[in-house]
Length: 434
Ligand code: UDX
Image (cartoon, rainbow, N blue to C red; front, side):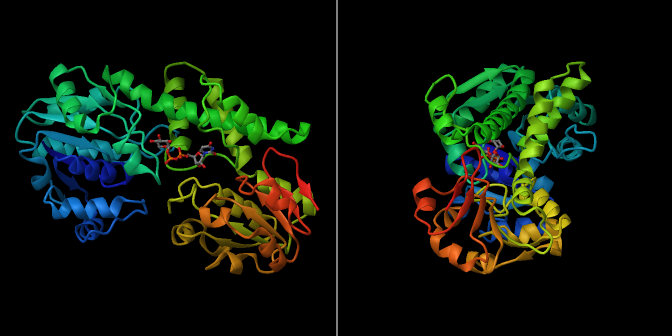
């Protein structure tokens, strides 16, 4: 099939690459010329394991193209997949301006009836609105398909090629069948719904997962005061198939480009229809508290942080990505510097992006050893493998004081107990002080 993908962010690029991998002719369109030139040279603008290899292979096979030309991408194309960003607007609602622009471009450049697949995360009713917008501005008919995306950064290719399910929401049976056909080589279970249900599935799924995280984080906070171990509790809970093991890792809150904005957007939609949804308000409040928890723990331990050297290990919102959007390291850095601490951070790949957001209020080290040198305490912020495999005993000898606040429960108890002198403060478990 001949497919155009609008937008080369995480979702657009992964989708384009994977569809070409299963044999389709894919043209990816983006307005950013620099990005398109980079992609044409086989360089991925995002850090995503496995993406560059597939990208190059499919370009060489002649199935994958990148362009800034709307004519090239949108004319004579049977399926147009829209994967532009829908960032959070000022009032918490999803900002649809990129999507509206994409719809306008589509109305100008299509020259036949076309199937429009909306992959961007959009509030309920958006597919109808986009259909009207396009058809009001051109003489062709469009068949809308809502096809939300569930890929995670860091495992985008795997999540696309081996998805748990594909949601196809459409009022048009022929379009739904065609998109089902497009994905057939993936052999993934397909659920066909109305467009509105498909739009809702995406928000309901993300908000549920975010709520699951806030729930386990609140259980962790309770575990700390009653002396239980949240990792044991999560293991015990997760074995119940009705609960499930995934997304029960307590930590310093959820971040990234989706959960924070999608929870707020769903809350906004609920409010617009007069539904209060207090559960989501609590999910957000717990997350906000959790994101600064390590600073509260450090303040409790030290009394004050003025002049303390704090090593922050990890900056990205999660491992295997250089994405800094809504990363807990941002509020943590702000709070630590506000209390007068000197922060030296290390991240295997995200330092450059972090500097653009956090700026020079903190220092950026080139290695873990450099960050922890003479530090009063270490804060573990992202569970990179490099950080999880630190020789903890060795690291402690380089520090001024052997104090670790571990926001991701990276180290087994035996590792900590083997240290000669240590103060270890994990999440949702008793501290270990030797
Ligand atoms: C998420 C959804 O998982 C994906 O389906 C959707 O398409 C986009 O949003 P992503 O943002 O890439 O994906 O990351 P994910 O792995 O889901 O993690 C989100 C945040 O939750 C991270 O900050 C992570 O650290 C945190 N998290 C996740 C926890 O704190 N505990 C967990 O158990 C799982």
